[in-house]
Image (spheres, rainbow, N blue to C red):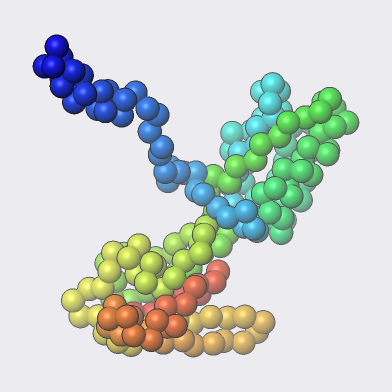
Length: 195
């Protein structure tokens, strides 16, 4: 009997772990965006109307005029709104056609807000800015520095309100826990230059 209890006690945790649903991170296609994310041009989203599959859209992109087109209601302004605000507007417009519409909107690709990194990194390019991102985090996404990079002289170029600002970033200082204020949160349009 003691042997049975011992085996049962050893197997139960692994069985329970195998039976419990696994939490998964958003796929590369579906990005977790913050609640205050502002929808912009070229963002892609899905719109699901519960029990109304003909009104649901698996993928719709924000056009250059800032609008999207949906079945039955036609064009609706999307750019400049949060996902919740757009979801509420779609629900309001659908009330003329559907009793108590239950609309769910999910941002699939947040491409309107992006930052660029150029120079001596493994993967230079444009990166989406779906959630707050620091200089250090962007460097990690870009695969880190190449051997010839001047890690003490990284610069951030930001254009705001017709003015251009420059910030410096010294990787060695930040990695050693000094002058951490250099590790700023990036804004859309920022360009990081790694000489």
